[in-house]
Amino acid sequence: MPSSFFALISRLKHITRWSLMRNSSRENVQEHSHIVAVIAHALAVIAREEFGKDVDPGRAAAAALFHDASEIFTGDMPTPVKYHSQAISSAYKEIEAQASVKLLDTLPKKLREAYEPLFNPAEPEKTLIKAADKIAAYIKCLDELKAGNREFRPAAEQTLAKINAFDLPEVRYFMEHFVPAFELTLDELDFTVS
Image (cartoon, helix red, strand yellow):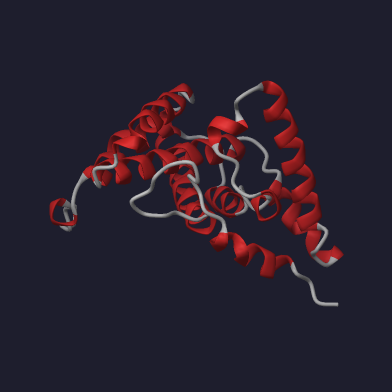
């Protein structure tokens, strides 16, 4: 029987994020996972190159690609519901863990060992992926606000507070040097080489 792992992963494109919010531009989990991987890679490079930390950008990017893979089975639980209470949050984390095991079990045994660390990354990559996830959510909020969708204002404020709570120099560096450009229009972006 063929393995369904990659066919299931490809279905992340059908899972819509921000389902309780009015969106000017829809975002799916596959798109979100891509930008989280790009940002996690950048955070790891910044951590290593600017702050001398022992972190692997490739491992951070690869694990970030799978950080929401369990949502193939669970869907994207809206943040207000997911964190409404400790009981709901704990139950959802358990469901996510079981969904990840179920997904990993669709791989041939010889490959499973290589993918398990991507579903359960170690530190420091784990924290960088969590930070990248919040930064990606904040960027989505900025996009919506730029499009005139004020519904995302509270989400932007709450997400920015969560980003600041990481208190990591690589996160501050990314937020200072790269995030402001997301508020610009295409014509305002600088294409000159520095």
